[in-house]
Amino acid sequence: MKKILTIISILIIGGSLFGTRILNSQLAGKWYTDKPDILKKQINSYFNNVKERQLKNVIALILPHASYTYSGIAAAYGIKEVQGRKFSRVIILGPSHYSYLYNKISIPNFEYYQTPLGKIKLDSDFIKKVERLPQARNKLRLHNVEHSIQIELPLLQVALGEFKLVPILIGHLDKKTAMEVGKKLRNMIDKNTLVVVSSDFTHYGYSYRYMPFPLNDKTPQMIRNLDMEGIDQIKALSFSGFTKYINKTENTICGKNAIAILLAMLPTNSKSTLLNYSTSASITGDYKNCVSYASIAFTGKWGKVNNINKKEKIMSSKNNSENEILSSETKKTLLKLARDSVIYYFKHNSKPTAEELGIKITHQMKQKMGAFVTLQQNGRLRGCIGEIIPRRSIYEAVIDQAINAAINDYRFHPVTTNDLLHIEFEISALTPSKPVASYKDIVIGRDGMTIEENGHFAVFLPQVAPEQGWDLAETLTQLSRKAGLSGDAWKSPKAKFTIFQGVIFNESSLE
Image (cartoon, rainbow, N blue to C red; front, top):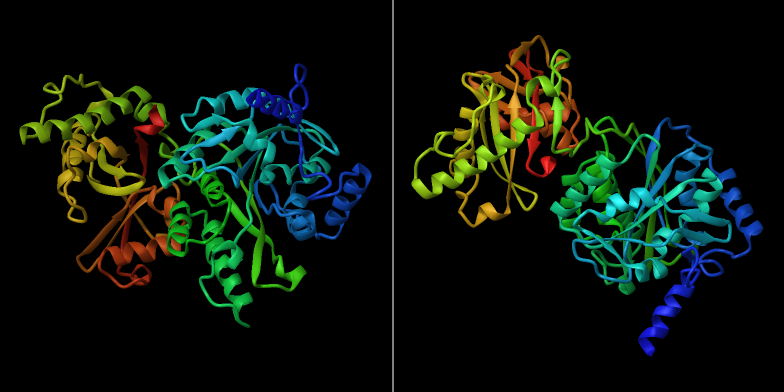
């Protein structure tokens, strides 16, 4: 009987037992006023007090989610940048504060959110696509009690008017899962989508069990410095940099996993702007227990190509489309060839032929191309070896370099049979390299590159710089150091450069 009453109570909170399923926001009257006219006036006052920066093509926002008394102004700085625009949908990624979800995300199974400003219809078609993700779960109870999504809704209603909503609660995700979820979501969205990440930043103090430095007169600046270190990684669009920052500092950013997903989604041409930063102590004056708030906007254009962490990147020349180089079926075959070659080597201690693996060689696989094979284990590099100069058929290069990456990359212990269960194979099929007159001819996000000076040599694949969030100067500095040169060696007139493009694809991108 108790179980039946619990189910009924949840359904009542959800709006109706048998009719339209509505989730009534539990924040009205607590986190903000429940009087519609007063609420709308309050939100408009926030917007009116914010000077718009007039950013063009805002596609994503990071917004705080405390009560409006504390973070309403900070959130308004972000939402002001999209006020009056029309979006077909808004996706909100909010952390699950009240239930631990390991490597899972939660989506609702109701039809509307209800706030004092009216109902917001959910994008049921899009949600059905999200439901097919292996990480997705329907957990209505979590959405009933969670504030991280609900707090953003009245602000968005005033700014945007009508839109369809996709609310997704994010659990605790490891690096690989965050990358996978980001990649899948990115491939679902279109140019009329706004993505909102709901997250506060540092929670400092005894109540939050996080005091990386003592409470004294330097605490305000120390908190700011800690936040800015993470925000700098976000502004650089660096998925790996941000996750490393979290691992190093163990910072209590509640939406860290949602932020990681966003960084895995953003296009390479995105730019970020920190619009506002504040803390709860600016209102209370109390740094004993202090929460930080940041409002960050991202501009760019959603699309299925040119993404910072997209595992299938097309970096071909203007005269070569993806289909002219390697078809989807050819990519799948080459990836199978790479994995099966390593398995065969472990069993027979010798390199296989394609015939021994039962793989039919197609015309595209006979193209002369350079090739690198990269191994990733649990989201981390596990091996990468290849050849730049196209001197043989790509399938032959893949067989050799897959085995080399597994056992001959001096940076790592050789891969074992058990390791293969957790390793993902990636192939970079490369066009011929060509010399350029200057490093200024190198285009980040399109070109792989080499540097040569005084017998020193190094190479970066096309995806390296975008994945690290480096600009051209930082890329060339790192390339110089990789070659055993000083960091500014690339500025020398003696330095010589070549560039090449490629098609980069891995097993998860072709599932």
